[in-house]
Image (cartoon, rainbow, N blue to C red; front, side, top):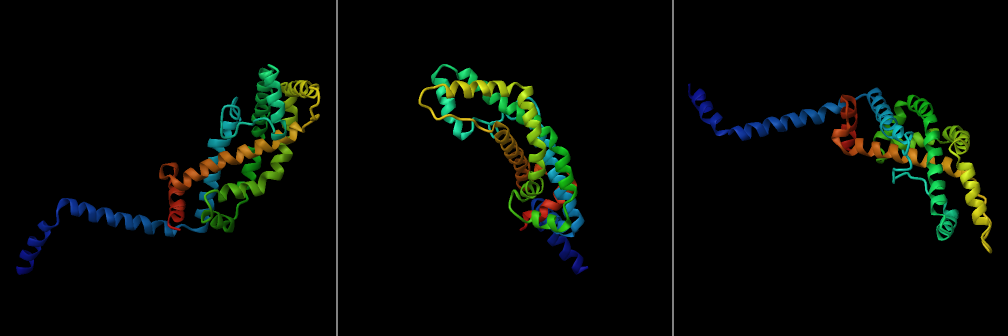
Length: 241
């Protein structure tokens, strides 16, 4: 009877707010422990899902009209060695020609990136459990770096002919022929003859990996970007490193 009276005296001493606080702490401890049960298979599946999310949500945007041209993060500008060409054309009142040249480069890149998805899918499905564990606990762009290492050669091979074909399709070859001819006709300038196909191909690759990095960093840093239970479970492990 004395014990019962003592218990009745103690319980009211814990306020509703304190009780909620205790429950919250208990839940947080359970949540922190739960991800530790993630297996190597879970980690690999989670990283593959994250990369697929990057490809689906970011790279796909680049294939749309203006996907490159109106995205300041990846917009392709004049090659560094042609900055003088750009300035010279604008001084001559040919700014619209320079603008058309830049737009045509971006259109070619938008076309080329459509060829990327199958190559990415192959690299993602080939990821091993060992790869995945290292990637998860690596830097905030480790997954993108993995993809870059395993796809760049194949992507270049796929992008280059598409870029070359697209340059003709969007009229970039004629625009650039006109740009180069106009510039080379200016007295006393050093003649230029850039490899536009190689330049656009490399800039397209650069843009693709930059956008995948954006999605990876979001998933690693923002809880609301982890849109599935698997992503939440796996990347919770990374949060504790």
